[in-house]
Length: 308
Image (cartoon, rainbow, N blue to C red; front, side):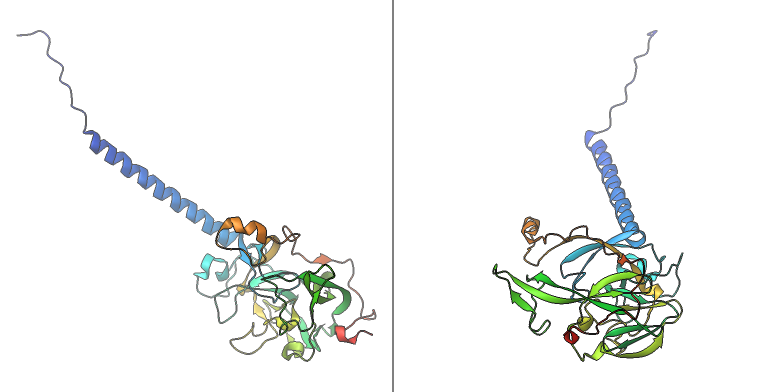
């Protein structure tokens, strides 16, 4: 009998089985990592900020079709509209609620749709607001409009300046470049928020609105392109915003433009460089705050046609 026993060795596991286990664990890690990343993106998109694209001319001249901008989600609290893709049911509940200020540009969901619109806050809860001949009358006082030099906006695929939209405003400069010569008015609200608007057509359906009182937890919104904006002035069901908007339907505040494309870009990202509009990137969308709003006694105009 031998004093020493032969050591028994355990055969290694088949290489194919070990590889299958490692591959399965690797795929599980990849899937979990992607899910965590997706959750983080959705959370940031819902709670902090999200990108926004301007699809219409209702906020010209301050926002153009093709502008890309950043909207912050937290200034007025969170509600059903904050969630990405608006997957939550409509509700008036708000978490950490806040109220916009005069002149803020906000995104809003209409009462009959689920897409985001963008407008400017011109009246707050409790305000009395009317529109007379295109002019805002806020708490019995006419909001002042002062004439600004016209804006020569370059004509491009996203700003074609068609005759039916901007009649007689398309011009050709001595250099041969075509522009849309937009008449500008500077509007200043009671808190000193000041911004430019366009109001170039007379006797439009939304130029007059009887006085209403903005209910609690609501705001009144208007587009800066007053003749081409379906906003709180439009009371027809299924069109515009149908009056004051619940604050629970406000999804955030527009902060700044990241970049702007003129409409000539294609699917290839390399084509975007030539389509970039110059001078629009990183432009703030917060209104200029004047120290004191102009008084009623100062010279004002209601329409550009009244100029001598």
